[in-house]
Amino acid sequence: MKILQLISSAGHYGAENMLLNLAKSLERLGCTCVLGVFENLHRPSTEIAEHAQQLGLQTVAIRCQGRADREAVQAIRSHIETQRIDLVHTHGYKANIYGYAAARTLPTPLIATCHNWTSSSVSLRLYAMLDRWALRRFHRAVAVSEGVAVALRRGGVAPEKITTISNGVDVAVFSAGRPTLAVEIGKGNRLVVGMVSRLVRGKGADDFLRAASDVLSCFPETLFVLVGEGSARKELQRLAGELGIENKVIFTGQRADMPGVYASLDVFVLPSLNEGMPLTVLEAQAANRAVIGSRVGAVPQLIQHRETGLLIEPGDVASLRNAMLELLADASLRAGLAARGQARVREHYSAESMARRYLSLYEDLLGGRARQSQGAVCHVSPIAHESRQEEG
Image 1 (spheres, rainbow, N blue to C red):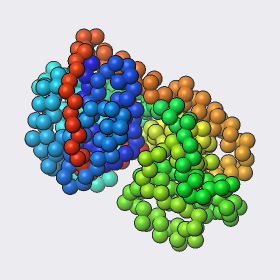
Image 2 (tube, rainbow, N blue to C red):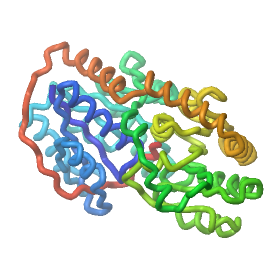
Image 3 (cartoon, one colour):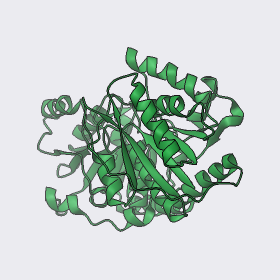
Image 4 (spheres, rainbow, N blue to C red):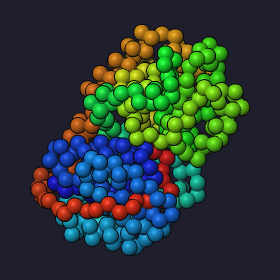
C-alpha cells in the first residue's frame, strides 16, 4: 500500500511529530509512505523534510506560490497518478484544501487527520471555512480526541465519516533518553521544571513564568526551562525580567534532542489554554517524567489526576504554582506519577498501536484490495511553509 502523507509545515511541532511517528510505524508494517511537504518561498522551513530523510522516508516538495496555487494542485494530482498512490492522507487545513482539490476527480480515497487549531485571524477563519467545506467531502476524517470529533460534527462532517484515533509516541526512544540538556545548563543537584511548546499566546508560558516566580521563593535553586520558539519569545523574556527571575529561566529555542530534553527535567508542565491531543504530554510520560497539565482538550484523557500526573485549571496561576510546589517537595510522588504515566503510555499510546488503527482504516477504505506498489524515491528540495494552524 502506498500512501501520500500531505502536510504544510512551519517547523517540527505536534502535527509533524505525529506524522513522522505514523509514517515510520506504517513502514514497519509494510506500507510505503511518501511525505508531500508544501514549499512556500516566503517562509522557508526544512525541518520535517530533514527529519524524514533521517528516518529514511521518501519526501517530495510541493511548490506553492500563494493561497490559491493551481500549479500546486496539479503537482499533487500528477504525483498521485504517476507514483500510483493508493490513498491520500492529509494533515492540517492547507493540506486538506489542496489535497481535496487535487484528488476530487480521482478514485483515490482521501483521509484527513484533524489536529487542534484556532482561527484567530480573518485569514485563518477563511481557511477554517474552506477546511470544513473540504472535510465534508473526504471519505474519512480522523479526530485525535473526542473534543475534535465533536468540533467536526458541529462543522457538518457526517458522523459516520468520523473516527477517533489517539496520537502515539515511540516509547522506546523517549525512555532511553540521556540528559543532554542537564549538562548544558549545569543542572547539578538542582531541580528543573520545564515546558515544551511553541512560544505563542494561548500556550500558557506567561502563566508558567508567573508560577515560577512564586515557586522560587520556596525553592530558590530551581531552574525553569522553556523549550521552543515562537512570536512571543521576546515578550516572555521581558516578563521574566520584570518578575526578576531571568537568571533562573532558560530559553533553549528549538531542540532536536527531545528525549535528552525530557530526561533533563524533574517536572514537565503543559499550562495551555487550548489543546487537541498534545504529544508533548505523551512524550514526557514516555520519558518517565512527572507531569502537570491543564484541563483542556484531551489532556484529562492522558493525565489521570493524582494517578499519572496532576491536573490544573487553565489560566489558574495559583493552582499551577501549588502543583509545582507539591511535586518539587515530594520525590516519591514524582517517581510514582512518572512510573504509572509511562506504563499507561506504553499500554495505550504507542506509535505502533496508532499505526495499526490507521492501517485498519486504510484497508477498510481500499476494500482490502490495496496495491503493493513500489515507486521511485523523490529527492527533497528546500521546503518552506505558509501561515499554519495552532496545533499542539
